[in-house]
Image 1 (cartoon, rainbow, N blue to C red):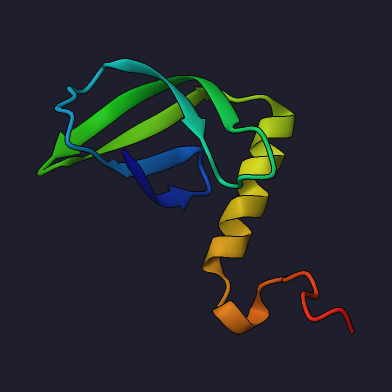
Image 2 (cartoon, helix red, strand yellow):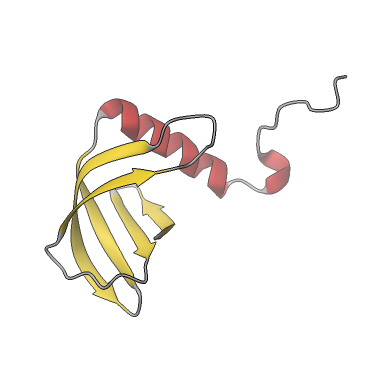
Length: 91
């Protein structure tokens, strides 16, 4: 399953090989970084599905996890030259 787009109203679009139906309740873990634990979304509801993708509404997402998810999305929306990278050349 791959995350595609996040909208500001706690809704996400996913691509998947698994066939899901509207009304299906899911628990999601989004692995955004190898350095941090996954973002836990304890309850999502599938609102629509078509052609290998489906949209979920985040029903139960803690404020801390929402903040982490929002940070990841902001990073993904930036151009590569805008992203914050740690200095790896030791200067």
